[in-house]
Image (cartoon, rainbow, N blue to C red; front, side):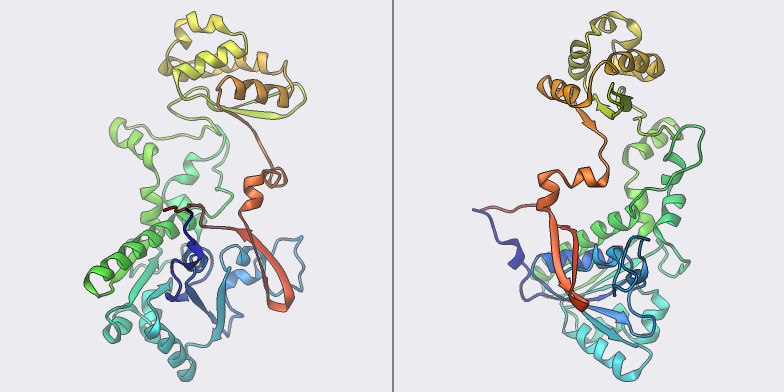
Length: 363
């Protein structure tokens, strides 16, 4: 039987002193699971800075941007000036009544306004204070938007086409990764509080979250001294994996052949069985080394097929492949439609975003 996840954190109170993406994504996670989330926004600056991050096609008169809406579902928004004594006391009172405070304030700013972890937890030891910093040293208050971290942590250098400039990820990937780290830390803190009755301080940083996500690329360097280079969509350790080809009707198709069995199936579908007898293609390591030549063989056969015909053939024969979809095509997928969360907010604006909760729990 499926468990009602929207009531899992019913009665849990969260106060969010956070803007942009990572911190608000944490708040929305708890809102989706039934918690009461109050987002404190700066009265002087018009609230979260992303309210004004509109793309050129958005209604300029709308009170919020689509960007803001993406991570601010299900919250109560309270505009306060934390330099004003009364507003500051309102914020502190809310925080002291909360189970969780989520903050991406600079530590010096939080201390100045009395909403830092030490001040609040001195009055409420059960409080879980979740702090998101830019860098591992919390006193390093250098500005650190997502693109800065993508550059500092090596993502930009690796990403893009060979012999072309670095390319930024098209979503704020480091913010998303940091949000997951902070959520996991808070969940562990809640478990710890159940055992001990006491809250704690949970901290992570954008930089540490980015570095922890380098996974195989980091190990390639740490174990073999390999400095990852820009390869477009291609995988540094597997071929053909991430390689893109053009069909006869002009569409792009990506292959993700990760095993010897799948490579054999690919050759059978494309009538390239002769490759299986050639030493330069018999094993994955050899295929990575001879990738350019391999791709010439594969492209020559793929251009004989229309996209839908080829996708069907690959599916029926267990060859991992995909059409490359734009955002409009993504939302033709029923699963994507099922994940849309709608909410009517300020001035009767109908807002949409993707769920951040995509796990299911059953008993």
